[in-house]
Image (cartoon, rainbow, N blue to C red; front, side, top):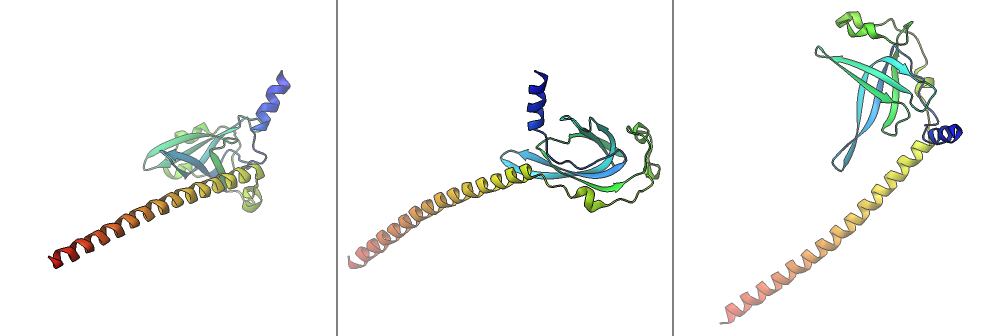
Length: 179
């Protein structure tokens, strides 16, 4: 039974995830659905905690402080809503859970920077996710073409009505001039 659950969980796992550590400054690109529209929202902040790094439920806790207010968001790394995670800075820390950062304000929240290869860390290709994105894009384009065809048919009907009305109007004017 345990192997069945593990197999099902692994089928939903992304094949490649960015190696995120505590102390990293990251940009998380997340899909947000508002009504029938979908957009990507970017949240940039400091990774305070990394949980269950090698499992299906791997998550990060990202903290951002602006205007005196702090916002913490938790993201599941293997969630289909998280499209991209980009490491912008790597801080030198010796702990996994940076709770002490919650009490610090202003310049005290700065961490000592560490050199790292941005391109090697952020250059992750998940073929499965890219394939589903491409399929969704094709589906949207097909829906758009169908909608455009319907609009064209509707416009043709309206144009035909308009020309019929103009013809009738010219006929009525011609009859009015004769009488």
